[in-house]
Image (tube, rainbow, N blue to C red; front, side, top):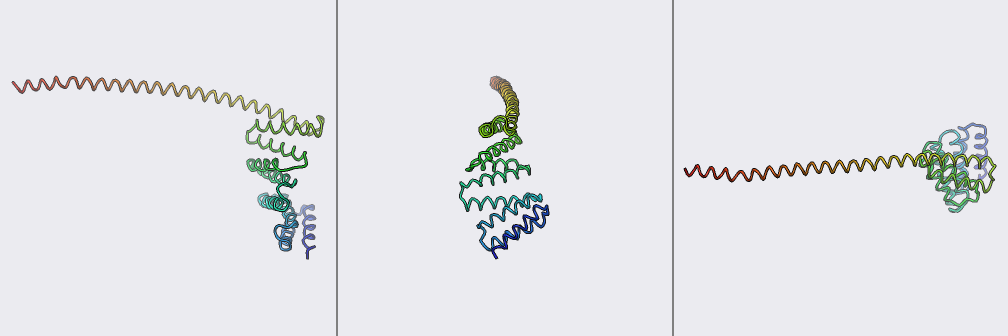
Length: 245
């Protein structure tokens, strides 16, 4: 019966809120199986079932399996609603956040950028995505990029929440920290580039000295060969005179 899937959904949710992860996952798996059998893999109930499975698995600490259902949810959502549906941005953000918590920062950045590129009617979600992207960039040492993105988030917070809001103040503090890190990184990079330039110049001078020494040695060898060639006819002449005697 079609109501069975909804009953399984409620049972899974009840176990989920009761911190009974094993039964929550089991009920969510049944909910997914019944939904697919009744409406196909691309029905609305299957989408909701993937959400239930993802939430249950992620809460239980089974991140790898939970991410698979988040990806399935994202695929079905785009398939059923089109690429401009506003919730797609939030879904990409959730996937990126899970990757970030797992330490897979490059994957997190990839999904954060996808989330930022999607249509999103909620401006505050856009600010959260920007802040999360900035934090991920800091983790990989890209302080200048982090500063630029955090600055945009701060401007949005200021426009929507005002200067005195806690989120605005936190963003401003992050902007100042990232700017300082970017400046320090720039100084270190400049010093490294200067050392590299000096090293290249020193290597060039050393190569010139080595080449000059090699040319000098080659010149000496040529002189010795020419002297031998000049002495050889005199010796031959002496031998001829002895033979004639």
